[in-house]
Amino acid sequence: MEVNEKCDVFSFGVMSLEMLMGKHPGDLISSLFSSFAMQSSSDLLLKDVLDKRIPCPVELVIIQELILVARVTFACLSESPHSRPTMEQVHNEFMMPKSPLVDPFPMITLGQLLHN
Image (cartoon, rainbow, N blue to C red; front, side):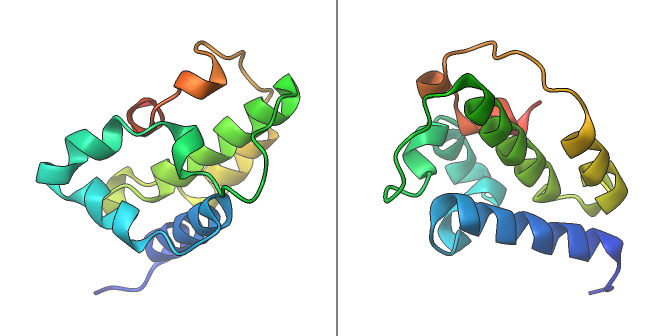
């Protein structure tokens, strides 16, 4: 395996997902790359993979930030290194103005985040 910036961004995605979940995301990441399990993991609700020790956010600005972090995290975990953003692109995503929510927070699936 070649060590480069795309490995670093993948590691950033793993760390970010671990912080969102409150545990190591190994099984979830494996299922994202398994074509057999991909369909079921795409149907998972974002709220169901978040750390259960922390209450779900209710303030719109916090929900938007959480969705942004999750969307960027899943982009960093893309199976194809060429599809992953650079850390500069990750930084720019975090600095851009937030777009309004399309779906209510409790209904957002991992599949929506993976394909955005």
